[in-house]
Length: 199
Image 1 (cartoon, rainbow, N blue to C red):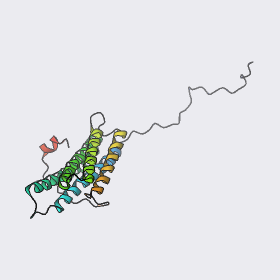
Image 2: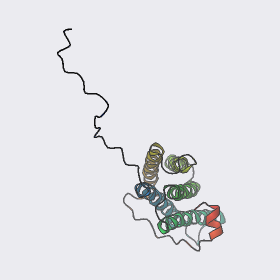
Image 3: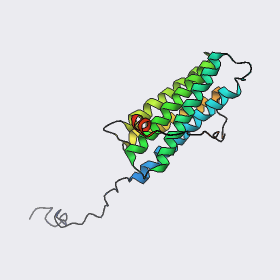
Image 4: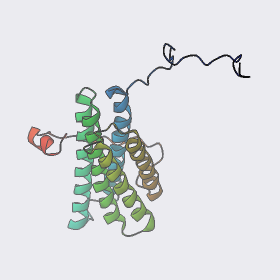
């Protein structure tokens, strides 16, 4: 008998119960919460920039260029609001919800360009515009084929980029901390237009 013969043997692997539960797959409802929050944040940024440009562009003293900037900012805010409206009309779907968040972020980036055009090349405005573009790219990556709104790392990166865009917009004076987003009419949503936007 060897000196180890009297030691208890390890229980055979076969027949042992593994009580660890498999991780539950994330549901579309789970993904909707993140995409919807990000979409609402982006739409709020777009609306705030539009309001900012409008408030600082008096109709009786503005040039055609300034009026055009205000119009483009308002259009971007309306596009973001349309993305939110479409998201709210549909049952949860990670891919579709991420596309709505992507479109809202893209519209907010367009609005930020109008904020930059209004303010000039000031450092804070440039930083805010760049942050908005970064948020738009991150939202696009989260919604892209292969991810379809379900990649946790890409979703987290998009959330972080959106939070950074909010802070940059606040620093530029486009968005006040805790500010309620101005109401933006969505206008008439053409089915053809919505299809082109992949909404």
